[in-house]
Amino acid sequence: MQDNFSNNLGFLNGPVAVLISLPPFDFIYRVLGLPVRAVVEKHEPVYTPQAKLPRRRVSVEAGVSIGLLDKDFAGLLLNDRQLTEWAPRLLALDPSIENASSDFIQPVVDTAVSATLKVSFYLGDRFTSENTLLHSRSTVGLDVPLADRQTLFQLRSKLNMWEYAGSIRYNILPGGFQPYVKLGYGLTWYRLEDGAINGERMANPNSYWVRLPGFFRNLWPNTFHLGAGLDIILVRGFFPGLRGLDGGIRAGYVLSRHELGIRDLAPPVALAGPLNEPVHVLRNTFELLGTLSF
Image 1: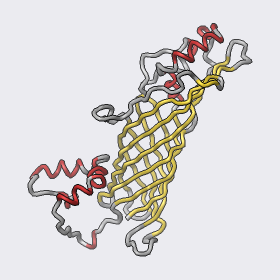
Image 2: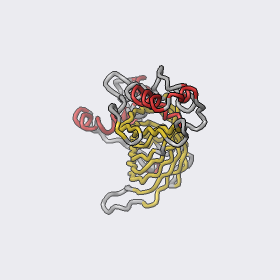
Image 3: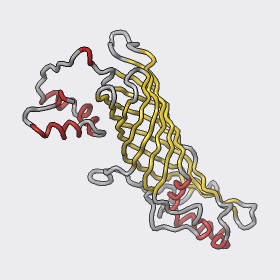
Image 4: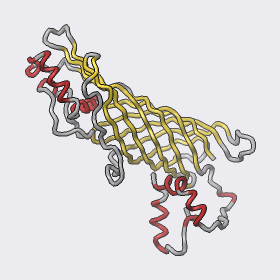
C-alpha cells in the first residue's frame, strides 16, 4: 500500500490507503481506475527489498458455488404481485384451508448452484481482499394438500439471485498451502420468475426485484458473511514467457445472513407457520474454484 502514499495528503495517507484496500474500492481503484491513473500519475519506480517480495499480488478465480438456502426463502412467495393471484386461487379450490392444519404443507426451496467469479488482491502474505460475484437460479415453491388429501396445490417459481460480496481474508499460513478465515459484507438482490400454479403460468409470473442496486439507492450492504477455506497452489510458472503465473484450486465455506425483504403481507391462516415473513434468512455456501495468480 505504501507505493500509493502521496506527500500532498499528509496524515490522510492512512485513511486513503485503508479505503482503497477495502472491497469494492480496491477493485475500482486498481482495475477500473487503471486507465485514469496511467494518464495522471507520475510513473516513478518503486523499490521493494528482493528478500521480502510478496508471493502473490492478484488472482482471478472462477468456479461453482453450491448454496443451501434456508426454507424461509419461501417467504418470497408473499410478494404483492403473486400473492394476490395464488392465495385467492388456493382458497377457491379449498375454502377450508383457512382452518386447516399446516402439518402437511411443505415449502419447496431447492439448492442454488451459482457460477462464481472472484478477483483478489494480496496485501502481503497474510491479508487478502476479495471481490466476488455470484449468480444462481433455483426453484422456490409450495406444496399444499387440499381437503380430499388426493389433490395437491403446487406453486412453483424460479429464484433469480445475484450477489456481490466483498471480504477481508486472513491467511493462516503464508505458503502455497494456505488455510484461511474471512469475513465481509455485500449486496444481494433477487426476484421470483416464471411463476406457475399446477403447471399453468401465472398472470404475473415475475415478482418485483428485491433490493436491486441503483445509483444512490440500495447501495448499502445488506448481507454479512463469515467463512473459511483452503487455497492451494498446484503449479508455479506454468505458462512459458510469463514469470510468476501460478495455477491452483481453492475450496471454501461461507455462512451468509441478510433480511429477506418481504414485509406486511400475510398468507392464508393455515400457511402462517410454514410461510411467514422472516426477518433474516441464512445461506450455507460451499465453493470450489480454479485460481490463476501472479
